[in-house]
Image 1 (cartoon, one colour):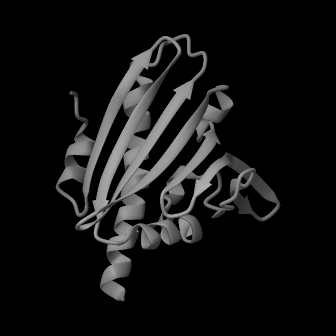
Image 2: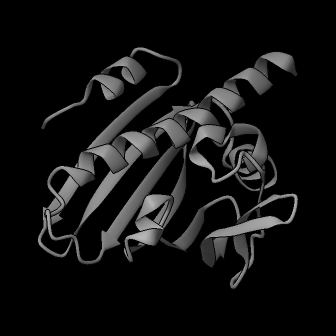
Image 3: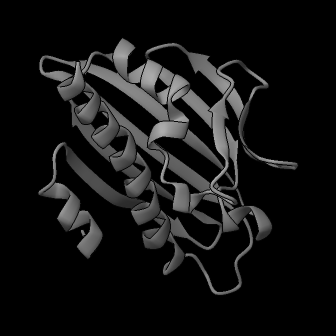
Length: 174
């Protein structure tokens, strides 16, 4: 397994993170990131849904606008900045405190005509919650997906690290 420098740095940070390119072929790719946090699945869910604007890295938004997740089928993971707005992803599946599936192309993937399923799975463990973030992307990319998949895995690691760091900071504040 090839691990990027960003992934290695995150492995030494709190909490524990693991980024991996699971599959790449001529049609797309799948990446998975995992973090273990001390909070319960209910606490993680509330932060994931209600506080996305607090933890999602602002340099991975279109305008550093306000982010929101409407946690119901057909809902929106959206960004609003003044009169500008973006629908980052559609909400497809909601099982509170267990699983959230969003579909669409994040960031530049959207403009490239790529589409994917972003799957947040929260698993209770004795020490808190294991968060698994998987992104399966399909589309046409003439250069292939071999170079793109690790970049997306690293960006997903940043997003999961944002949530994990937010949860850790919130615990120390409580």
